[in-house]
Length: 426
Image 1 (cartoon, rainbow, N blue to C red):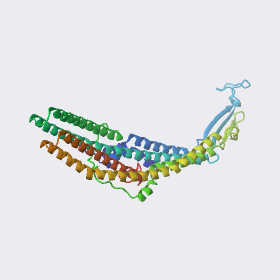
Image 2 (image 1 turned 180 degrees about the vertical axis):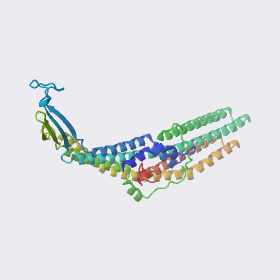
Image 3 (image 1 turned 60 degrees about the vertical axis):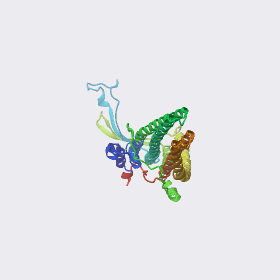
Image 4 (image 1 turned 90 degrees about the vertical axis):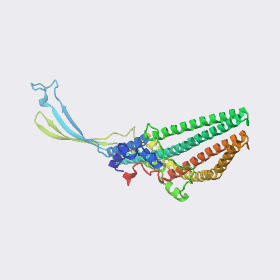
């Protein structure tokens, strides 16, 4: 990516006001857009990619020439005179310029290594973005589940209150013992406490979601239908898309960077040559002469052997990681598909069969208790079963949506972005 494009991407936080919805609940795409635009971790990784790009430019520059001025044979005891510099009339003045030439293709090798490190930083930026997007999506669905659980807990508290009122009426009429009212009041208090805890959990998750883009206020989200069926791509499409996963691109970029660093370490085994050319003036007779020289370090002790061996070891390690990353991601994608299908079947069974049956049983038990057909234990058990099934349905809905997001993130499907600079790269 050109350096200008990198600078544009790194300035995404300056446009945050235009990217985030104002006073509107966040949808999942809006949450992920906020992560792209303002996540501190993503911005830090993006700026590191920019810095590596500038370092790549620096690595391609020639070393600066060196200007030298030397004066010899002046101000000694053998010379005299009244000039400001005693004895300078017999001095020798040399003005020369020297240039170091990096042999062995070092400049080209280091330039390529720096470019490879810049590509690695960009891949790391995209991998960081994908991981944070995936985590934010999970928190989004967890918050949606928590809000629905809180609403159900509040509804359960209302039902518990209604049942307690019915028990109180029967106790006053002498149709139930006083201990029944104590049980009903205890059940109502427990339901009230559960509702308060569920609401607190939802509020905590709202703060956790906004922290992804550095927000300090709880994030309000749009209602997510956790009970709706999920949509999964075909296994062949997932397998094809996983090959472009940011983690795999990072592993391949890391391998390329390590191999270029190994070539640079080999090139640095060659000594550099410094050539000088100048003019020497003999003050005694006013004549001048050219002066030239060449200097080369003798590679007797330091042949960069330690760095060469270290670079070779790192290259082998990166090659191994790149090979295993592809297999790991492919296996992870297949497991995600199986998990998504399994959790969706559980969601369907609970939502379509268990929940209606539990609701009908709880309604019948409350009605029957008021009519004197059932005892309090039956009514309380039916209500507890209904509440438990509701919680299980919400948990299954969250698991299904989270598994769907896992598949989409692995395959790089919307709403997950392929790269941080999605608009700039096009």
